[in-house]
Image (cartoon, rainbow, N blue to C red):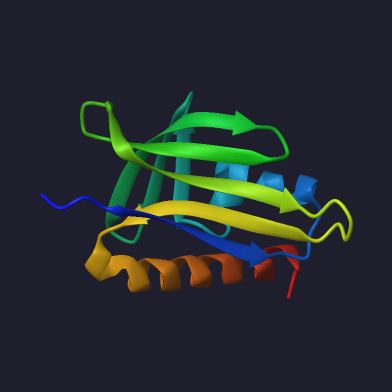
Length: 130
């Protein structure tokens, strides 16, 4: 079985880190741009897109800075894959970016990156950062 490739994308976002964090760390915030529906029960999150349902565990978070979800299997065991959303703020210019760390199979890499671009575009629209 081929392994997925880790990749990073950085998106400039015209927002305060505090506001952006609400959209990447809460089910209601994630539901506005990342998935059609997001449910959480404790540390376990269910992301729903159309007819697809994926389960993840909140692996780590640092308030105002980053959140990391580890994909889990049907037995609620961690897989080796995760996605992380990290807020970067330039100390001098105060420019804010969203760093996305994710995994994709090599032949799906371009499609995965385009999907993130579309989702982050939705996020920018929701928070009024065009």
